[in-house]
Image (cartoon, rainbow, N blue to C red; front, side):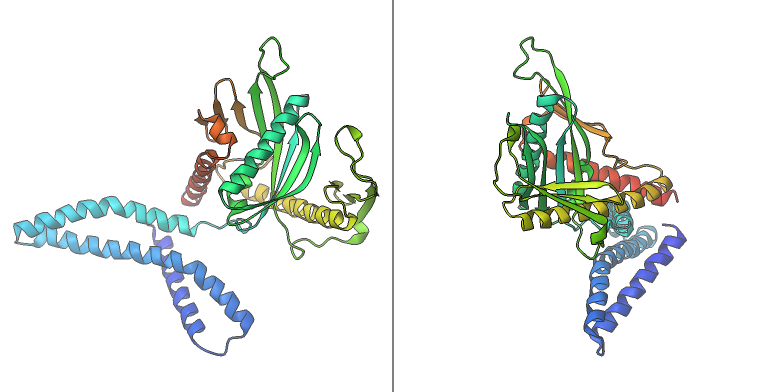
Length: 360
């Protein structure tokens, strides 16, 4: 490792000691204890990695001395065998330390709002959008996450124009953030007599859930309309004006919520979604600025970017960003194999960020 990185590691070790001494002392206010405890807990695994690395280096040096200078042939052979194992292990320890030092995404621990919309392709696109929404629901269940329906606009043929849900649990946004983009499907629709393959698409957006403190919304910037909720084909599903449409005038963002029978609940849900969309706009601006400085990245975060193709006749799913193809479309759609794609994307993103750091 270069000298500047070693100096940084020394600095982290000193800071960890300072925090430990401060926390074991007295006189700290409650807010200070919470702040320092958080920093200490975040540094602890990094420090453990640094200490393991340096311990291995010390051991390497001792073994090298024995292998070179010992008069005992058996001892020299033993030292050389252990040296070989340690030299193979050392790059991995260095890699772990470097990965631990990568900047964390501040939103990774947040819950997420999932939005799925039918794109080009008419009824087939709406059917695919419904299947994608179910795929994420199943995936959430498999991971032990909570999946709360926010809005569902059905077509009446088993498809959806758009659907949204709040997904809560551990590392939700961290694992789903790269799902945003255009998902394309290729298959023969049931109504297609000639057996011709059709291509249609749906758009997925994954937004970090925003809290009240993250985004301040001024009431004067909102236009709130109420109307009667309707079901597929315009069929009335509610006899009161409980549906809510909120327009954020400065940005033009519009959120419609009609899933609840209570106007108050629909308004609260709509504000939650609006807050998250506004927060996501800020996040995209930050990401774009950072991406301009990075050598490479997995995805641009652009909602119009085609990220994945689901080819049913060939039973394959291809993620275009990392050139990964799985021939297990049924398991992907059931949520079972989605982790294989997500893990590969996260690994690629990690590698790209690490390369950007190493090349300066």
